[in-house]
Length: 72
Image (cartoon, rainbow, N blue to C red):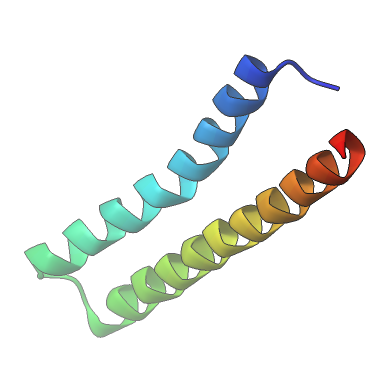
């Protein structure tokens, strides 16, 4: 099993990547000036990144349950 500090560092990176994408595309939408097609693409990328975050959090929850079961 990976050391706790390495696990936390990995999880931090995995969560920050899609979050940064969401923040970047929201900023682009707020600035305006993009075509309707570009805005639809940004929204699609935001939705994908949000789904990625949800998946990571779900996987993390399952992983923590497994660890707790092994410890008990």
